[in-house]
Amino acid sequence: EIDARYARAIAYLRLPDLDKGIKEINNLINLNKNDPFFPEVLGQMLFENGQIFKSIEQLQISSNLLPNNPIILLSLARSQVEYGKEKENNEAISNLKIILKAIPRNIAAWKLLSIAEARNNNIGEAQLASAEAYFLLGEYSLSIQFAEKARISFKKSSPSDIRALDIIFFSKEKLKI
Image (tube, rainbow, N blue to C red):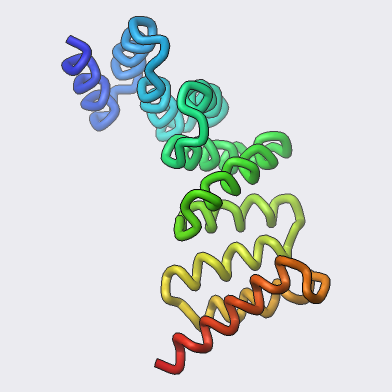
């Protein structure tokens, strides 16, 4: 019964038939208060239908039920960045840093971090996050450009400056190949 309802909710999401999908997933949430994946699906439905703030509420419930899950945190951070208000943007930065500590090669998280840091006017950190993303994508010339720009904002020998230097060094090594 739960599997069938879950499948129907997903099908409504794909159609899209938001009203039926929300009704179906809310029934599942009410029957399974401790399942983190039902509010996560509802959060996705709401996000994809432009109800960004409501999506944050549901994704936060999901994250509270399954803390530090990188998939849920990435969805939550995406909604928080999309919403764009200062409080949510700062929460997104925290969530993205948790993800990147666990999965340093998460390109989507680096890209979102770049946007969130830029929105906070942390231009050096935004450029460093872009450099990380471009390095992971194998775009070494771009990673060098962004890391060099980022260094302008950093105190020499600070952790961010050293990371930017690492990106420049390893990007240049890759370009020699």
